[in-house]
Image 1 (tube, rainbow, N blue to C red):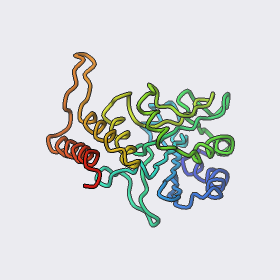
Image 2 (image 1 turned 60 degrees about the vertical axis):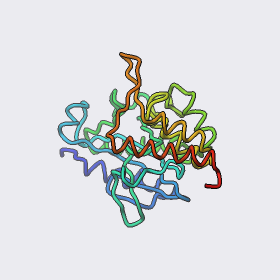
Image 3 (image 1 turned 180 degrees about the horizontal axis):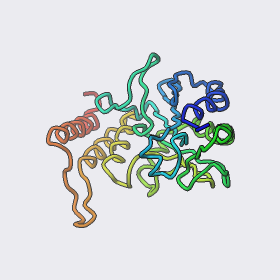
Image 4 (image 1 turned 60 degrees about the horizontal axis):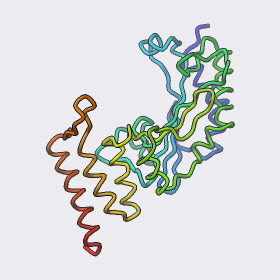
Length: 251
């Protein structure tokens, strides 16, 4: 019998999903789940592969990769920029739009893994072995990653000083990172500004909102305005508003 993505889903549902449900993940689609706690959203996606991506990634259409994401209240996704839809329990952000993201990899030496950290499923037996290995990854460390607390002051220091984005990693290739872009990039500066606002540090917020208007050309060494005039004007106004709050805290 040819194995299909449905076989993999059934194995995941029987073996791996109960672990996540016991951990509080209560909003589900076929391959995605979310957990909400005090303004925070944790997310797991068991990503499938269409024919094109299966050929590109040297795997079958029954194969699976696992991605995780976290949205903390201080880095809430702006309504106008949201990609994910709303479900019965609230907003369901996609993994790719969440500020803290991760990819979970197969166990070292697992026969069903490939070089791209994909669980390659060629048979029903593979589907069960893969589901068990995915469960093992969550039991060993991935659920702990999704339980991580994020101190705002420490995040600001990390974003201002760290060349890397990675905050956790495993020898098998699993990674957990703040999806902020390069040091001093527009996206990283916007993140710093958001965090600073939650602390009432409007001077820092104004500085980094202003910096977020500018991208850096590595060839010329020059900064340039990269947004549409409308979006740039909006950011400039936000920076000015934060500066005004710093100089006139009662305003």
